[in-house]
Length: 143
Image (cartoon, rainbow, N blue to C red; front, side, top):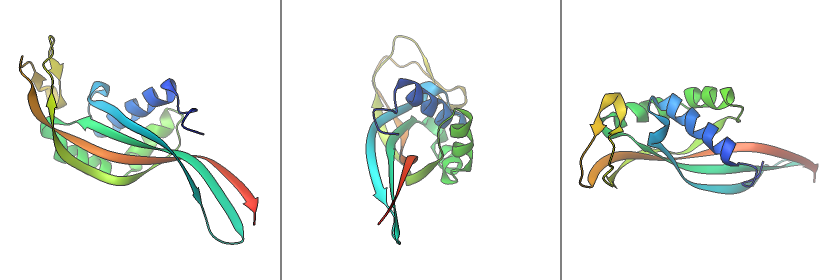
């Protein structure tokens, strides 16, 4: 699957899978970027794989340590991805916590474990960034 094949439905499924594996609401998960990648293997058979790397952000609030632990082992994430019809992923860059300024919202945003963000001013909250690589198609050819 190419970047073009990773369309709106697949992206929504990916967001839902990440949210479910992390224990957060889907609204807290954002795809930052999608990059198409191709890899090759060694040996007398050459394997060329086309897939996507998905840079992801989770608005974590006070649960950043808990979410980092959940995503440290990709098993739960891969289970959720497969439930939505997506292939397994490899966490290419482990989750890291960064501060992000969240713009004010007219309606409360519910964050982890019921924390409500109701401030009318911009608020700085912990976010997790990570990179997941999904192997979506494999082409075999003889060298």
